[in-house]
Image (tube, rainbow, N blue to C red; front, side):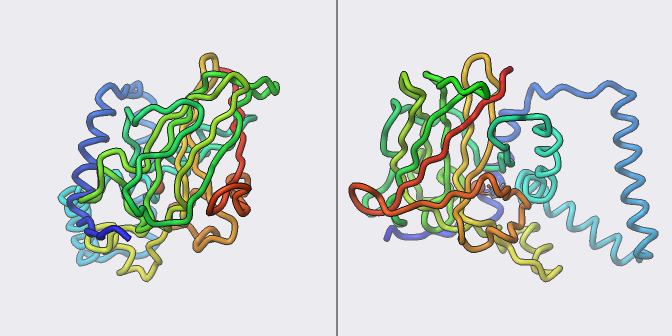
Length: 281
Ligand code: MBD
Ligand code: FE
């Protein structure tokens, strides 16, 4: 096994915040009437919680201090993606007929190394985790194979850590972009990731511990699939029987996204097929 250097919440949070700010520069503001309606309702929902629980000044001040700490720890991306994004994703993808979506989370990085239709993800010597071959086909909802579709893939390692967000991991470790062949097929050689634990030393972990919740996401693969003339899908895949598949802290598991790998037909480890079906743009 490789040496594990634990990320501090503040270090991985700061990277996630910086990445988000780089990518979100051009986010459009809603029109004033829509913003008025949304902000008014959001505040009213909080006011209702205050009345319902007869919030004290001590609790209000603890809340204020905690919000300040979320920012100091750079954990707004983590907190929001774990506790809020799943509802945004459901609304955004409600009318899709193709592959179900799931949340993006805080650890996507654009520009991963490119492979052809088949390849091995960047890995360290002795990378931990069972070898896993993940393969499949990209198709349109009408059933046509999509040649030249891009499968942008990222995942945690066998310690549940992501490259570029935890220290000591090579830059593009376990990240890569694949392009489907003439039949729409791709094949990715990787490892089975470990479950992901929310950092325990940051504001999000402090809330989880104080409330007596668990801090885990089940082991998962992250994928964005895109093809000309089709809607990009951002999703995640999970493993049947994996720990926390039934109680993901981020509420991002869907039955249609659970894989059941089998022993590899050649070589060590396991393999599993999953086909991506893209809706028209
Ligand atoms: C993750 O790895 C993740 O995928 C999400 C959605 C939130 C926190 C960590
Ligand atoms: Fe993740």
